[in-house]
Image (cartoon, rainbow, N blue to C red; front, side):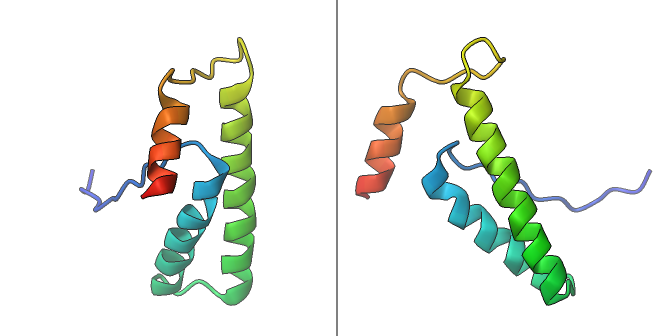
Length: 80
């Protein structure tokens, strides 16, 4: 199996970070030659996926685990 060059983006599971993920995805998609329609569809799908992940995190008993310090860290990042 050929080794692939992969990158991973980890951001807090908070809606205010969705624009960061969208910017990264559209930049990479543009560099890979995606059409404008494809980039638009990518950002829509990414937004839906992020919204679903955030909602799942907030569902009690749904397997989403919210770290006790998540709000404190989110507030600290927002102040920076």
